Length: 464
Image 1 (cartoon, one colour):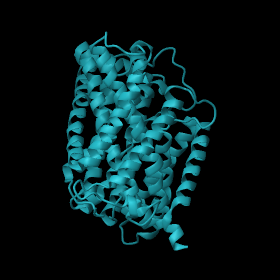
Image 2 (image 1 turned 135 degrees about the vertical axis):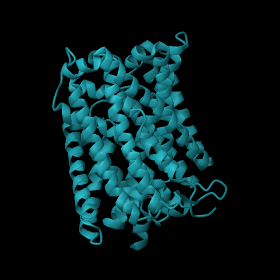
Image 3 (image 1 turned 120 degrees about the horizontal axis):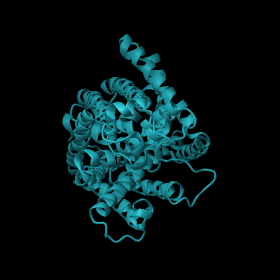
Image 4 (image 1 turned 180 degrees about the vertical axis):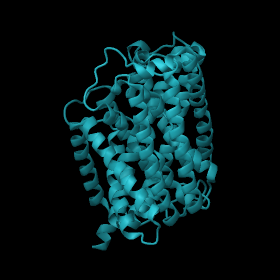
């Protein structure tokens, strides 16, 4: 065993990491959710995508400045440690290791399984299912649960045993997932303008759709899931060649690609079907109307591949979380989680921990969000609320960056961080308005897990 990771990823892989992690299931099923939240108001939905993208870009630019200055093992933990302090950096690492990464990874593995089964059952209507697809078998059936666990183990195994293969897989799935998005953006725009559907959707709303609360805030909150994930790319900064130069480039280039793809895709979808049909049937109906039933179903296969790429990227970051703490002599058993296998150059023990915690979060997601077995308090959306928390923990980092970095110019030190700060606050407010009491239950769980992190931190005991 050794204790250091090698630099094995170039700029192109890093860009694919950013784009591939962020562009997953969110752009496909959150587009439908945003139409529901706005009652089919297309201009309001586009505004939500623009606001969400702008928040992502200003945060991304600000952290790219930090990436040019700070570099150790895990970008986000490095930035938290350098700006706020080692204790804050530790809790940031603990949060990403136990809540943020594993929570999202578990959900994306389920979404990958869901769309795989949707594709199979659409292509082969007689495909045997314990619960028929028409009755929700693709959502909560045993086949879906088994496939989800397989995808989790497959992603874990690929990252733990062959990180280079995981990087190539990320690059390939990123290229593949952009194909249907580009087709819909271009095809939907052309067909929608020629046929008039696009103009109709822009001036009319869907009938009989009730809109509750603030539709813009709720929609921006939904975009948070679709836009989130870019920060995960910073978790491999110790493995990127010339990281201080290439990581910021990857973040900026990747962020611009993501925002452009999302907005044009959303507009393209509006050209393929009415708002009412998009709300009831999702983006598949637009693909079917424009490209035919066969290609409409192939979309589900592309979505599954897209989600698998995102799952792989999330697992890639997830497997390194405990190592990033152990490298600093922090967390439980740093001598165990800090080991790096000589043959695979992967922190194997850290990866095993990641798989276990991810499986635990999937169990919670299934019982509360899918099966509905658990009801009442402590039931929340484990795919969105941890994302909102990340904006909360950004705030001290941004404030301290502005206070400490006197050698930076005005743009880097004040303008971009202030914009990122405003965007973070906006996301938090949108979360509170959108999720209401669920935020309280989630924050209680968050505090308990953070308290456990403080108890098991070996470095604190050593210092005493």
